[in-house]
Length: 127
Image (cartoon, rainbow, N blue to C red; front, side, top):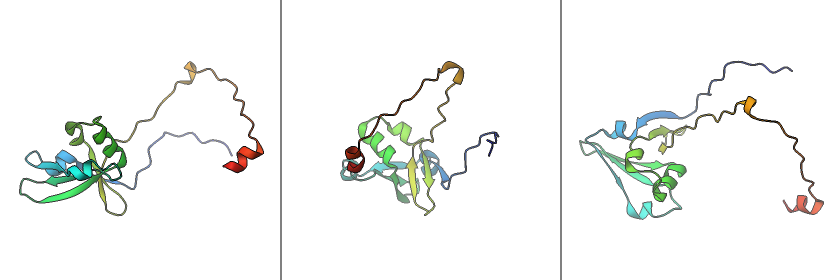
């Protein structure tokens, strides 16, 4: 079977975008964190969204967003720009942006041989 080259397009994900945190809550809304939850690395960070009219909902962060917030690598300003996605079960969560492709120009890469290392029987059965 021959390779069929065509223009690459990302597959549509089963996740639906609900908009960014700021778009959902609105500029007159608020977000809040529960300190006990925020300090517990075994849980995803929960964020309380409160609209201007006082209505609220709790939305969990993805595992990656939770780790970034707890480490201080993500600011509150970055968080409000994050997208809220809804999974196939209808559960919303705050997600990191999808990553772009990592492209490598082949004219800058020189191919080299790869020699696999031998695995002993003992190492194989220990897996």
